[in-house]
Image (cartoon, rainbow, N blue to C red; front, top):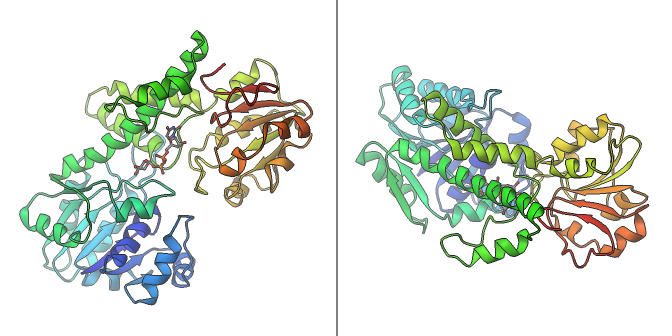
Amino acid sequence: MKVAVAGTGYVGLVAGVCFAEKGHNVVCVDIDKNKIAKMKKGLSPIYEKDLEELMQKNYKEGRIDYTTNYKNAYKDADFIFIGVGTPERKDGSANLDYVYEVAKQISQTVQKDCIVVIKSTVPIGTNDDVEKYIRKNLVNKVKIDVVSNPEFLAQGTAVRDTLQASRIVIGTENKYAEKKMLKLYENFDSPKVLTNRRSAEMIKYASNDFLALKVSYMNDIANLCEVVGANIEDVSKGMSYDERIGDKFLKAGCGYGGSCFPKDTKALHFLAEQDGYELKTVKAAIEVNKIQKLILLNKARKQFKTFKDMNVAVLGLTFKPGTDDLREAPSLENIPILLDEGAKIKAYDPIGVENYKKIYPTEINYVSSPQEALKNADICFIFTEWDEIKKVKPEEYKKLMKKPIVYDGRNIYSLKEMKEIEYHSIGRK
Ligand code: UDX
């Protein structure tokens, strides 16, 4: 089947490549000419495991192409996927400008009946509105159905999460569209959840917000552990044997980040508020996370009134390991404060540096190993649990730093192995 995909970020590009891999004929559309040129050469605009290999393979075998020419891509497509960004506005609501820009292009260019599928995370009711909008503005007399089909991919495992999806949620308003979607996904061996559009939209938010809530809950409990003298690692291990709780997403740390949890918690909270409902649990998750992101600095503040002229080693810049994405990374909350106070920062990250340089080109001394960052440092902050950072041995902090003082936001060491070092972590004493 002919599939056009609008947007070549995490959502759109991964979906396009995976549909090609499953045998469909795919064309990915983006407004960015340079990006398209790079992709035609087989280069992925995002760092994602297995993606580049699949892009090259499917391009060579003629199942995927990339273009800025949306007219050609949309005019005779069987499916048009919308996978553009829905960034957060200042008030917490989701910005749907890009979604409507694509909807406008679709209404002006489609020449045959087609299914428009919204994959981007959008507020409940958006699919209804986009369908109305496209039908109202259609230039050619064709039949358009809008379907909600949210994605559940995590960065670093995006390809696997799509090809072997935990579930495929299909929200439609009629049997015709449902049948078409099932045909499109017939080669995907994953449970299919068939529902209406509003429920599909809600499944996406409810899933992400639940996971964010789980992390915030563990962070809240971790902070209490410190107060009452318990150990969060043992607590989470003890909890994990209960199958109803499970053993995933129980790691306490210096807060969640990324392109989804922060945005989706705020968007659902905003949406509820607009409808006169207070979503208390999600609100709590957001509040806990805000505090948690600054927890290391606030702990260190008890010891150092200011970071002026201190040599600070920062290990880890990205929001989690396995990605170069900095969106909502805890490092981005802490580093501006350190810089403002006049700290001298040496930072190490295996992949995130190029992106960080776009924000702080000269203010930070970027180094190519954790050891270089630690040399002569007065204090060390660990924000991301990269393997390269986990490999640093406790004695190296002792050997390299002026005096080993480590604030670890990801609990990468056991208390025992760090007992000869001044070591502060999350939820353990
Ligand atoms: C997430 C969801 O997992 C995915 O299903 C959804 O489609 C998009 O959002 P992602 O943002 O890539 O994916 O990252 P994820 O691995 O879920 O981690 C999110 C944040 O939570 C990270 O900052 C991570 O460090 C933090 N986290 C996760 C914890 O602090 N503790 C945990 O136990 C798990």
